[in-house]
Structure formats: structure tokens, C-alpha cells
Length: 367
Image (cartoon, rainbow, N blue to C red):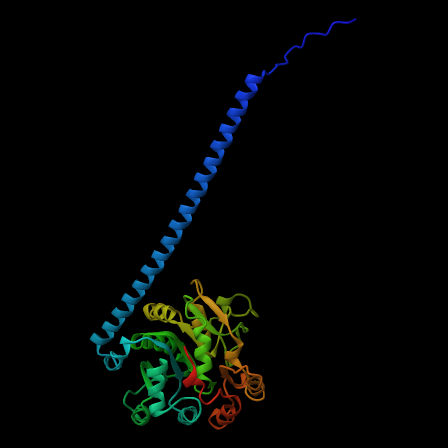
């Protein structure tokens, strides 16, 4: 019989030693669990702190914007600009909060268009006052002054305003190539006069359903920095002589490139914080040839929520008519081929008859 060789280098662990190792192992596991819990607590506190800092940043930003708006209003009062009389007249209106301010962009030569809007979708007289008081909706035709202040064109607007009391006069010289500047001044003036959730710009050859517009905007009331419209990205036209020629086409890259996404100019809306941003920075915001492109460019680099809503750019009948019959009322209707309703002074009545919201829609709507 052979002998069992002695084991070399093999350790024999006794029962006592096994128990010791078990206790050490459990201690390590317990320590690891405690470390994980502490780590989770630290991460949770970091997230809470980060959220608190973000909230504080937003609060400070809002306060800064409100302070800047107040300073801008004070400067306009001290300078004695045309805005001053509007501000003093609207001081009482600033005590209340409005849903929206609708500025209808118009020109000296557009009297027939204005009358057609008054005869269709824009309430008149006591109804307009009721709309302001009960629904918090301001609607005004927006126009500046002529190159010769106090001339025949300005006197005609003053006479028209004396009759209808529905103009917002800007400290701005009118001109088609000055639409980007006019847009900046409109938002700056409107945000100084009325404290509203939204500020809307619409052309005077577009049909609007006011209640449907209000209901659309209300859905986005709680969102910060909102930019609402029919978003598009058209070609940058470098060829001179074309209607929408872009003199600064080289800034957008190679020939054939498209613009960044922006709302079409017939109708769009922005929230108060964006209108205030424009007011504060109006002197350094660059103006491109096309007003809707300019507005879109001002928001690049900002944390802005773009809302693309196709009901803001329906076609004229039969398009908006079919949608109305299906219960999907359009916010705005116009002809793309004319960048507004073709021959709007004569056709907007037909569009209103076929595409309007209910007669009592505005008065029964809750915003």
C-alpha cells in the first residue's frame, strides 16, 4: 500500500475561520449597501439643487425682463415720443391681464382692406369693448407715420381713427422695405401698453376666427418662450428683381440653400417673454429683407418652443369651408399665391361667410 503524499501549499480552513470570513463578508456587503444609499442621497440632493438653481435663474431672468420693459416705458415717457400719449392712455389697462393683443399690419393705401376687416371678423363699437373687457382680447390696426409727418396721409389716418378708435400708431416711418423694423417696434410698443399672455401679428388681407385663435393659444399658455405659426423653410433667393430677393443671401451658405425654419408672415403669435426680449434688444436685432425671416432669426440661439399649427394657414374656400363643415375650424385663411386673400377687399366677405366660426363662438368661449 502506498502512502498519501503530504499536501504542500494547500491551506486547510477550520470551521472557526470560516465563520470569521462570513462575518467579514457580511460587513463588507453592509458597508457597500450603506455607500450606495449615501451615493443615491447625494445624487438626489444634486438634482434638487440643480432644479432650484434653474428655477432661480428663470425667476431672475423674468425680473430682469420686466425691469427692462419698465425702463423702456419710462424712457419713452421722458423722450416725449408718440408712444407717450398711448402709454398714459393705457395705464389703467396695464392693471389687468389680457389674453392676447392682435396687431393687424396695414398701410396708408389699405383703407378698403381695413373696412372689409371691420365688416367681417373684427368686432366694432361696443362689441369690441366687450371683447376687451370680458375676453381680454385687444385688436388694433398697426401703422406708423409717413415720411412727411403731419402730411395728408397721416391726417387721413387720424380722421379714420377718430371715427373707429381702432389704430395703434407707431413711432415708425412706413415703407414696404421697413417691415422688419415695423415688426420690432410693434412688439415693443404692444408689450409696453398691454400686459398680455400673447402678442399676435396678422396682415390686413387675412381672415381670422378670433375665438379659435384664442382657444389655440390658451393650450400653450403655461409654456415659456412660445413661437406659434405655420413653420416653413423657403429657398433663399439670391437673384435680384425677384419679389422676395434676399440681399444677404451669402450669409445662408451656398446658392440654393433654404432658410432656417420660421413662421410664415401672414399670422404668427409669440408669448410675452419673447415680445419683451424683442423690446429690450430691438436696437441690436438684425433686420433681413423679409420680416418673417427676421423674426425667426431673432429666436435662433434662444430656448424657444416652436409650435407648427397648420390651422393658422388654411386656404380660402373650398379648403377652409370643407374644414369648417367637418368641425375643424381654421384660425386663419388666405391664398398662398397672393400671400393673403387675393383681392381681399372684395373676397374676404365670401371667406367669412363660408369659413367663419359660430356667431356666438367668441362670447361663449372660455379662455
